[in-house]
Image (cartoon, rainbow, N blue to C red; front, side, top):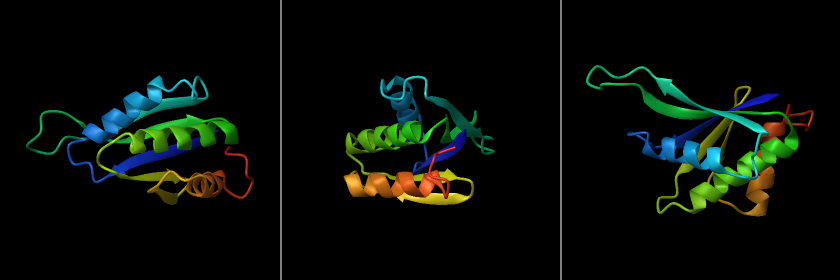
Amino acid sequence: MAQVLIRIEPDPDAKATRSLYRALCRDPDLGGSAGLSLRESAPAHDELGPAADAVLAVVNSGVALGALVVAIASWRDSRSTKWTVALERDGLTVELQGSSREELDRIVRALEGPRGDGS
């Protein structure tokens, strides 16, 4: 199993992070292959509640990791603001800034790690 932390940069009010989370939860290609949760940080002294600062995805295979990256790119492409999306696994962070096949392949390969299996 692989844990991937997904951050939208910049996202000061967490609206984009929540939007991405909802989109990933509804994505039929992810199905049951990714466990998803919102990671929330403690509220600032002038805020009433916690702020979502990232989406945590747990995937069980390289195929699920690929589906996750494609779903994130699709969400990003549907937005008027082209956010930078940072994906982190085991201390390695890669940024998604486009949706070309080469870009998506590069991200999946980097996140798969040396074993190449996404787990």
